[in-house]
Length: 528
Figure 1 (cartoon, helix red, strand yellow):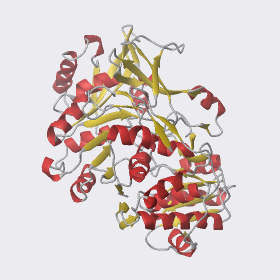
Figure 2 (cartoon, rainbow, N blue to C red; figure 1 turned 180 degrees about the vertical axis):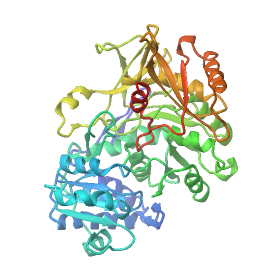
Figure 3 (cartoon, one colour; figure 1 turned 60 degrees about the vertical axis):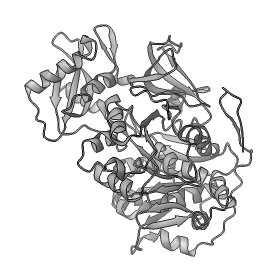
Figure 4 (cartoon, rainbow, N blue to C red; figure 1 turned 120 degrees about the vertical axis):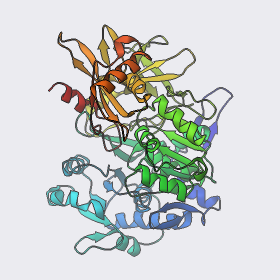
């Protein structure tokens, strides 16, 4: 692999035509003499790069031994343990296509994914097996179910036993950089989940374009991603990026709460920490927030949703480390627009990652002027090939070399991009666009507010106005007086027409499994 770059130009990365992503990520570490170094540390122990290489080979042989052939699919519904990289990379090495499934979905979701993908095998963590049990006998394509866990379970095929019986060396499948490599299913918040198809070249390109030049990740780093491996963001954070340079990745199977994340940060001293805005906000409000001297990170990263300015500033003041807010997507695989060390402008998502081209367009697809709101579109080498079995949705999202993000943005004259909201979430108030995110950020600047979400609601004259749903910090109580105080608080920071005409205090906001606020549920609630 060659990286050519002239001063001021984006990197041009050339991969050989014959290329296997798993072979690259493993062999680069063995050839560099890092076989004895810890690659992954999970709740049960540590795995060196050499031991990982053998496990991956055993997984490749085990899948082949079950009769799976090149380009067939295997669904992985695995908690964050060393079994995830073992199976994910083992399938890729064998030319079999792994599908990383969200571990927090329903039985109906998994039924759709198994039928839609026609996966021939399922590998599932024992703690998640019961969600699949009711549907397994009805799957027309599924032939094998393998369970990952600490102990074999009677009547179920054991992953540990399969790996132990498989040969320790495997021949890599003859794949190219443009072969289908893996799938990720979208969250399905706007319909059925979309099987997003990525190529062998995409994994390493995210590391070469973002992790190395923007984060400066190196082999001495220890990384921890609260975002899970099934998430496109977490897959890069905790698997691709550390393996690209020989770093160590910390995996945590349990849910990332302020308490569990604080334990990871203080016990294992990661130098790079990846979170999402809701987690950063919850940690700042938690009694479990570590003191500055108890952590060792030099980089903190946020994605998944735009980071409110107030959260970024408070985190930086507490720890002395900025949060690098960025945006990526399942379709683009990882971050393509980001703040960077020494160049953080809280309230913006920063500037384009070199290697990606961005434009903001109007409803007709024409570029808008700086300072005007439009839809963000991206061109870059990690864009997904298409959505599986969804031609019309593919044609709507993938426009030649451009990929539609579905996000509204403003680019200023200095080239910094500011998030305004999802296309479907934007409000037209008094003839002007209102960004829900902007109003939410103003509310979050009040000391009593933990979380906020803003949607549109019709007033008595059937005109659209902002309504805010607010979650208060522990110890604060909702009241008409506090609602009026929050309205005045927003009016003091934004144009008057943007303030929320109604404020409703609720215990928690509806969110997706990856922590994104489900505003469509709040819009439905506002129309009742």
